[in-house]
Image (cartoon, rainbow, N blue to C red; front, side, top):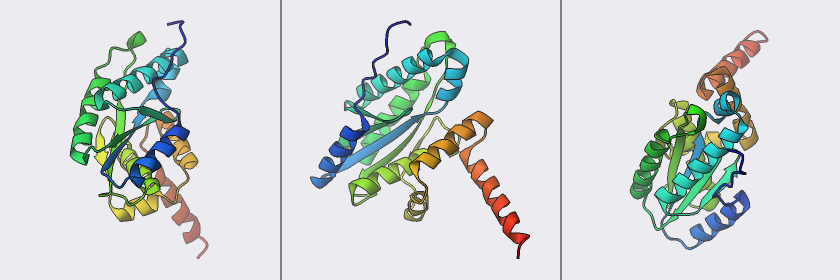
Length: 203
């Protein structure tokens, strides 16, 4: 375990360029965004070196199942861009990936799962930025439902609401939920209740 782990994944800047290029062609493009559900717990229980190996194995599995380049878009978040692949085909590929990750033999007995969101251009979005937003919204929906699952793009109303929250805040919310062993939706409901109580006292 002493060798440096090399992630078989391309960086976020390349992802943005390739996503825009694929959408500009006007052909069907499916996008999957996947997040490692319990990486924080793995790092705490087994060490960061095991966590890095987990990331490498997840990225390698994603590349093999999708037959495409895997992009690392955040610390524990990856994207798979699938030009000329329908939503249904993308879903099946990601389901194979989800099952494969769950069954990985990991160092030190670590266990890990992934939550995946899948969306398709032009069915779910009309431009590259919106396609990424709806795929990420689907991924967050999968996590809120307990993780270790795949979700498709939510309704347009839900996507619009989710786009109001900066990605940095959503990542902090995810980390807090993992630390407290609660879901993100539970924390959001708690925050909304506190907000309403606050203003109920002043009106």
